[in-house]
Amino acid sequence: MKKVTLNDIAKKVGVSKTLVSLVVNGKARGYGISGQTCDKVMAAVRAYGYNPNQTARSLRTGMSNTLGLIVSDISNNFYASLARQLEDLAWELGYNMIIGSTDESVGKELKLLEIFRNRQVDGIILSSSQQNPTELETLVKSGFPLVLIDRYFPTVPIPSAVVNNKVGGELLAQHLLNQGFRNPVVLSLTPSYISSVAERVEGFVSVFENAAIHTEVHNIPFLCLVDMVEDFFTTRLHDKNMPDAVFAVNNNLATATLRACHVHNIVIPKDIALVCFDELPYFDFSKPSITSIRQPVAELCSVAFSLLLGQITNNGETKPGHVEMMPVELLVRESSTQISDNNGWRSP
Image (cartoon, rainbow, N blue to C red; front, side, top):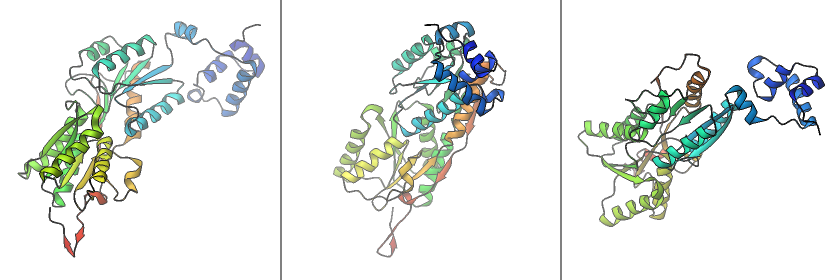
């Protein structure tokens, strides 16, 4: 049986081979090709069973039209949202996307970088778990398109899209301080050197330090987060040394805190306040609703994708070491506001 070619499709539809190629490769929108024409081309593609040879096309053009995304945990709602929006941006311009999770393992991150490069991806967007990114510097110097998202290295010249994590921590701390809380605890993550984690903690702690209040910071391993948060509350209840407020540095820690409070019959915000950096869909309608920092996920993805595309197309718009830092928003809800008890305010 004769193999179907682009020419066959072009003759069937009555258009040029180039136009068919643009439609098949998902680039019609960028060239102003109408939706009606696209529908005709794709109908012919399906009718003829046309299947482009991706390997041959990659060898011919030097491009695979595939991008890589590497994050710490794709099951985390924040990273799942990033992945979906980046995938949509990529698809609109004719790129596919493959995704990997590192579980905060540097070894796994390096292996995924190797695998993705062996798969001939055109570029990678990375949320790195590394502390000393020597390999990433080498990769960038070789000319390979790489963009960091969510996390970055202030002293290493890699294009990055991040939010102002320090300010987010400051906003949450100042809110708690204004509400009268004086004995906060930070539930953080290991590795604690990761920029997003370190800056959130730094911002939060600095506000209380300026008020001459000590803040405890507990770093919890990524892979045993739920059990260790519950153990923290078990120990504090036993020792009768409960904080009056908890800052969870990400949504997984906030969820673990809510679970532990439920197990131990700790009532939020009557017994303890809870604030979180980042949002979950239920934070707005849970009882109590959860005070949090909202990150501009859509803008973060748009900037990261533009930085990567600038390197891939070599249009000169992406400068080495360029860092885009976006603002965050404080959403004050019920979990951190003072509540009335017997016609008086709860004393922190």
